[in-house]
Image 1 (cartoon, rainbow, N blue to C red):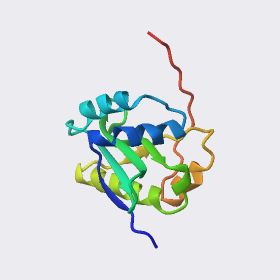
Image 2 (cartoon, rainbow, N blue to C red; image 1 turned 30 degrees about the vertical axis):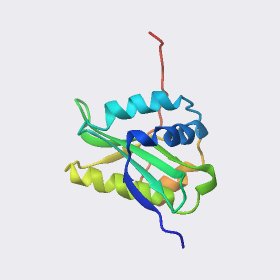
Image 3 (cartoon, rainbow, N blue to C red; image 1 turned 90 degrees about the horizontal axis):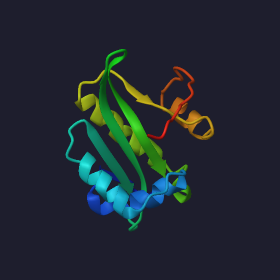
Length: 145
């Protein structure tokens, strides 16, 4: 069994995170991801973790955000989780989830939430198998300003 390690992301991971993100339909340049990491990583309400094995390429990443909203209170939300297409079903997602859950517990937050697009049907059993329960279904509306 291979060893998967998880660590905090670094700006130097931007190209690998861009590669992974593009696999889920969110393509951006390495420079855009580097700029975002420079902004997010110093913020205490954000965390980004990456998973790797003995190889040079990252196997996946997870991004979480500690939020306080008027209507639901305090919680941590998984705002991004991507496992490389060639590394799926090898435990990478579970290891990343565990890192996010540990970080959330460390904030003293009572709840961890994840939103999963309905078109990503393969991810729904993954989250349910990890103990997450479906709370609601919603539509997302967007307006370019």
